[in-house]
Image 1: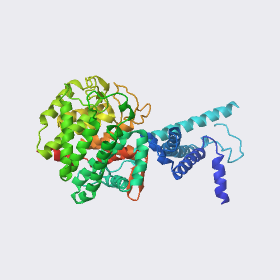
Image 2: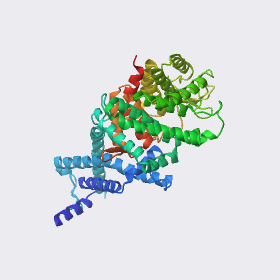
Image 3: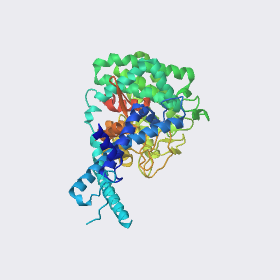
Image 4: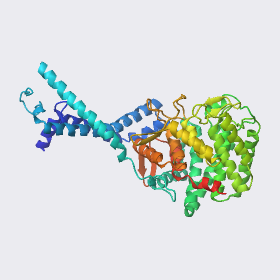
Length: 116
Length: 396
């Protein structure tokens, strides 16, 4: 449990351009989309057809909710995989060129080494 | 400090390069997750799984009045036309399904009759305006008494289609009466135009009416061949946009254009003309496909306007995605034309878009698309089963 927590903490505090940071972003977007689905917001995407799923709500409200789900969905199918692939590519690059990898400030207290 | 900045820039550049490469890798692959065998949507024989699921949802709406009321209320709040078109597309779909699976005809006929009778009853009680948008009342019709080709043509075709599935003598007279009114009004002016809205004639409605004439010829031994040929000849001469060669969407009774070629109209017009004048219909489809049909990264969609014509976003076009010009109305109707003209690549790409962007929702074997509505789903159902009715009309 502690190891998992430490891992998550390390990932969360990872350098903005590290593979871990991209994984975190993907996870956050996926979680937000999951929440949107669980809340049934996909029903509001009917605003795209000019129809309101709930005649008791104003058109603006319905469109805004639908748009939120739409953005989260497209983030999920477009951004999440791209962020994960990016993380994979960076990881592979860092593995292939280890001398270019800089210490992760969230991972250790070592000073940044200059490029050789 | 300088070294830190240099390092930051280096890391950012590396991340940006990785992000760009990841995007370039992912985007062309995305459609593979949504591309399914076309037979899931459309089959030349029998009924596809998606058609069956869509139909189950619509049959539920017509067997559970409370549920139907909710759906109709949602649509009528935006557009009363959609309530009407949702009915017509469903009737035409059920007729095609009955022709595909004669064993299930008896399941569909009661629903078909219920829809037709209720529709005619509403029209009788509340008048033509019950199914028209409010602006229909803004000015008088040019030809009186006020009649709408939108209603007369589609109701006549509903009745005719029902009779093609199984003859019902009770529909013969009302269908003939409507067609007589249409014929009389079309022959009353040089453009053979009949209004759908005051001084507003729609190519879509004329094309539907022509099919209704063809159905009558098949069923009742009448001959409207000359009438249909005459309309097509006039359309080719007066109703075609010079730049694209596509038919205009709407015009005044004197022929003055109102709306130019539009995806939400032309795809259906091409489909209907297929039963009337196949070469002209195919020419229109091919032009529409070139001007308005697109496949990008494996996803198909329809534009509402050709590059040479700009129109306003309205209830027909539906939401138009800025920049791309993707139109919900045109894309939905493109399914009908693509299936009709056996443009399988385009149809498969359209289905991929549908599964990607229309939020399919399945419950107990019933399918609906959340981003669509009842009329949109009914049009998709029609696209997934069309064929047999047109074939039986065109049989020598």
